[in-house]
Picture 1 (cartoon, rainbow, N blue to C red):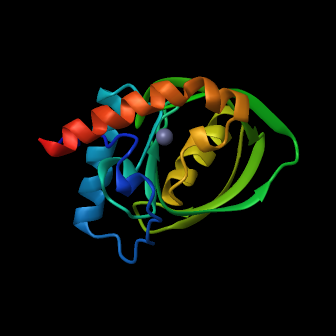
Picture 2: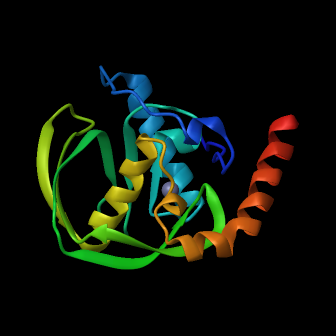
Picture 3: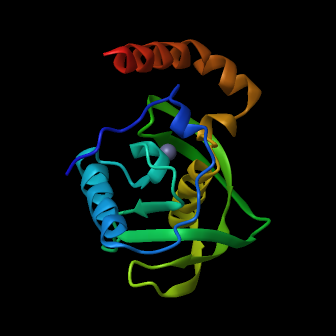
Length: 170
Ligand SMILES: [Zn+2]
């Protein structure tokens, strides 16, 4: 099943998400549907809040042949070394801006099988993980860009918000 992707202006994108307490069939189906929705939208990641589910989970597919389904993630360590590169978000359509992220991170999360794993990630995968992780705390990448960049996109953001409001009234 394809989900409708929630867009800038919706409350679920601002709310903090809650831990997943049990990996039920419902959670497994949700993650499968999120993967389908992400692929359909040609995104590299999709987090619960983006489909209106404020649970701490997300999916990532950076095109390395591994579709990652991440439950209750934690970022244990972040490198001081940073990468700065363009980011976009399915919930903020049409906007791409540079964001600074830790180049390497050490993370812990639960798999769909209920296994708790620790993993080191770097570069694009680390960046995608940090972006999706932010969604679980109600943070969008546009809150992490420079003040100048923020000014540049303010009109565009207002347009997206208007579109979102229109959609919600339907
Ligand atoms: Zn996003």
